[in-house]
Length: 396
Image (tube, rainbow, N blue to C red; front, side, top):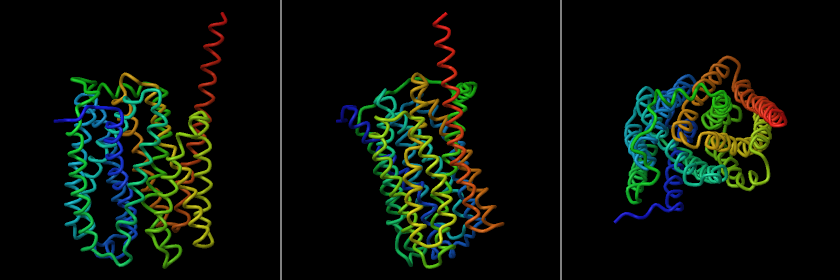
């Protein structure tokens, strides 16, 4: 007998999916901080950059499709499908023996992550209506918690190929459990039909959605660099430093800020939160690049996590407010197109790192953070002009 679809149970399904998604987001950066694994598979800076590009390119391709699929078959089925894809990817990644052998698992992880991300964001947005901003941030806290678990799960300093493989098999079993959970709850918010992928792409005519895509693209790009490069950066700049501990500080700060985001959003406008957080993120990344010691680096990494935390959920909640009737398609398209930032910025960071060193490479995500702040100011000005024009029209 299946359980009724109460808001709490639906939120729990979204939380479970986001926790698994968070683990996957932190996985590349965590594995790159394990010399026993990277050296055995032949990873260098260029290979790491390629894997990140493949992972985020896959999310770019699959997220819009997943969003459209959500509107057609329902959030819970897509959530289950994504978890199954991740389980398969973990098994294949556990068997990889060379760097090139990780590319297919990376694509499957991207497809699974895209499905889970689109389904869980839409499920919470539809379930909680006007409260979606706070609840999306709360849900994202569990995604950050999953990311925080990854460095500790793979935290053995001398962890080699066999140790990594054993943990990946454990993650595969966990993903299978997550895949079964949506089947225990009656379907909710299901639609027999919805916009096709081509129909969803028509939303790109909306200037406001394009603006949100640009903001989220910068955010995804900066977050991809932070998640994927912090461990390698810390080890390269300060030899002997624990890469797992450093990336754990980042995810810890991100988790804490997302936990506090609902309280902040109840007292401040969404655009204000995005402006302040993005500016703080840019300054923290600059502090990382200039850090003279491990203690300064640790503090800057933690602050960067605090600043990045509320950005993506807040931007996604604005899209949910704007498109209540095509929420799955709009959120899926937003999350998909924004992955362009997740593809381009890690690649640019890798190029800059190879040419000028690890410290100079962090200029790329710092500029992205300041780009979010500048875009938010422009959005604020445009909204003010629209309000002024509407008020003037009513006065006439």
